Length: 114
Length: 108
Image 1 (tube, each protein chain N blue to C red):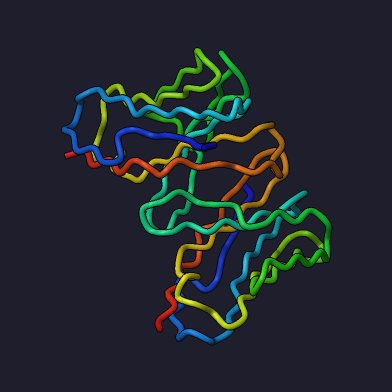
Image 2: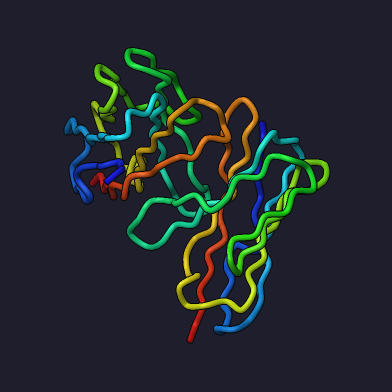
């Protein structure tokens, strides 16, 4: 089944403790992206990747890192999480990089930073 | 900065009613997408429109892209409880911008 898999679904951590949220897609998609979703603010892009070893900042990249060493994986790293990073995170992928491409989303990771 | 405003923010209706959700911007988009997000899941694409004035139908859902490609609407006829969810529009030019969403609750 074609899908984007994120792990974990829920994560509670404390300020400053490094964490990684994994994202994997099995559709051989070129484009992958991370979003955060906050009430009243919609989906905001954190980082995106157009291909292996090619990553770029989105609209809200501060406090986050990503890597794209393989086509299928695009982990999101929070080196020193802070409470303002408490949010619902989504990984997404699409076949191409055009903005009218269909985005496939994972089921989300609810992160709470205490 | 491109912004996409959706209205209303919240909508609570009975099964069988009709409704329209709006997505507006001051910017021109080359394409516009509508996604539906159900609780505990990620957004799922419903439709993409690319031509000004374009109308697309998906069963009871009718999507329209404004003539000037700055706005769009989603009309649902005879809403069902299964239509409950968060509806997001997303406009694309050189990047994809998501609207703030309309949360729809359909009661039996």
